[in-house]
Length: 113
Image (cartoon, rainbow, N blue to C red; front, side):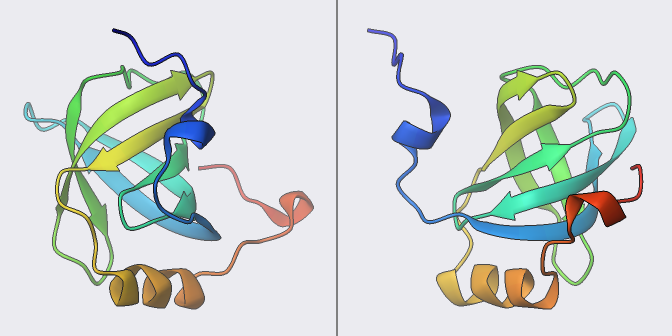
């Protein structure tokens, strides 16, 4: 049976708005610069400049400064946004700490990716 609920209705963890620069790397070595716009222990929402090749079901190594590379899979995509699910959840204290160090920026001040 297919889960037709919106991604926000399927989430089990609280998401915290943030603004983090990161890089997603494919198994073939392709790198995609991105910004994380919200973070939870189980995943994150990202934005990518221009058109991007991120497709649902694709596995990436997500590199956030200060953390080991996180295994992730693309859960959904929409235009320049996507949702990544972490292969192993972050510890809640780690997620909270990262979000506290990287607060969101008002949209008029955002730089392109």
